[in-house]
Amino acid sequence: MSSLPARPTLTDPRFIARFASPDEIAHWDKHVTANPNGGNLLQSAAFAAVKRNFGWEVRFLVLEPASHAGGAEVPAQPSYNLVLEKSLPVLGRFWYLIKGPDVVDVNEVPAALEAIKGLVARERLGVFAVKIEPDIIDSEDARAVLTGAGLVKVPNLQPNDSTAILDIAPEPRLVLKSLHSRGRNAVRRAEREGVEVVEAEPTLENYRAMHALMTGTLNAKSNTGAQVRGFEYYRQFWTEFTSRGQGRLYFVYENGRPAVGAFVINYGRKGTYKDGGSLQRRTQYGDSHLVQWTATNRVKELGCTEFDFCGTPPADRLKDTSHPFHGLGLFKTSFTKTVTDFVGCWDFVIDPLRYRAWSTAGERIARQLYTRRTGQQFY
Image (cartoon, rainbow, N blue to C red; front, side, top):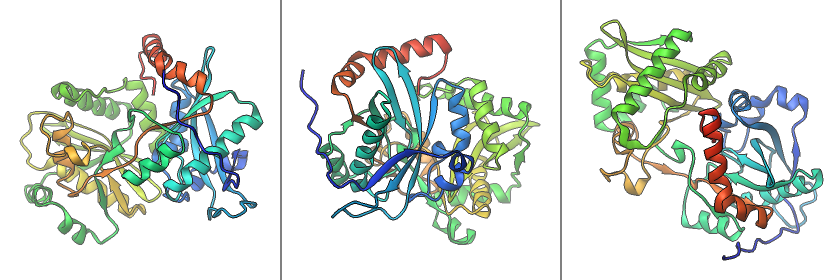
C-alpha cells in the first residue's frame, strides 16, 4: 500500500486556531459573513442547528492571525468556520470543515490547517483527519498548493462545487440585460403573460407542498443520482433559516396548486437558490425563470450582491448531454453564461494510520451503517 505524501511543517504559523467564545457563538452569523470570502450559508448558525439534530456534533472554530508570524505574511482578519464532528469507534474523531476554511486564497489553506492540527494536539481531541472544501476557484495552481501540502483529493459532496453565479450588484435593468437571451426572453414572456410569483408563508402545509414538488421532480429525472432527504430534515432546515429572516419560499400556482417552488436563502452578500421543484406538465411558459428572477431581486433588496444557482455540471462538461445535471445546467446558465468550479473536497490527514483505515473501508461502512440506522444521509 502506497504511503501518504509528506506534508511540510510551517515554522512561522500565520494562524492560531481556537474555539469560539460564548459571545462569538451568540453572534455567529455576524462573524461568519465578515469572513474574507463572505462566509457561506453552510457555515451559518441555522445550518449548525440543523446538523446538530442529524448526527453531527457542532464546533465553532476561529482562525486568528498570529501576531508572531516571523517572516510570514500575517492574514488581515480572523476567519470563523463551522466544524461538523463525528466520533467513530476505534478511529476517533473526524472533522468536516464544511465550505471552509474561509481564507483569502489557497496559499493560506496549509497554514490554516497547521493551526487546526496544533489545536487538536493541544486539546488532545483525537481528530485523525479534517475534510475541507474551501470556496476557492479550481485551477492547476490551486491543486498544486493543496497537493504539495499533503492533502488528499476526495469526491465532492456539495452540489455547488460547480455552479452558476450571477452578479446582481448592478441595477435590475442591467442585470436582466446581462442574462443569456434564453433566460431574459423567458422572464419577459412570463411577465407579459401575467405569471405571478408568490412569496409563500412558512407553514407546514406549504413546506409539504414544496417537498412534494422536489420529490416529484427528482422521480421524473431519476438519472441525476441525487437524493431528496426526508421531509423532517427540510422542515427543520427551512424553519431555521426563515425564523432568522434568511430564507424565503416562492411558489407559482397553476389550477389552484403550487406548480413551481423555490427556497432561496440570503446570507451576508450571497443569495442562493437552495431547493427547487416543479410539476412536469405545466402551461405557463417561463414560470420557473420568473421565480428565479423574482428571488434575485428580493435578495438584492436584502443586501446581496451575488446569486448562486447552486449546482451545474463542471465547466468542461456543460455541453455533455450524458451528464446527470445537463438539464439543470442549461436552465441555470440561461441566467449567467459561465460556470464556476471550486476546488471541492480534500482530506487533511493528521493520523496516517487511522486515516488509511478510514479511507480503505471505514468511511464506506460508517455511511452504510448510519443510513441503515437512521434513513438519513451521512453527510
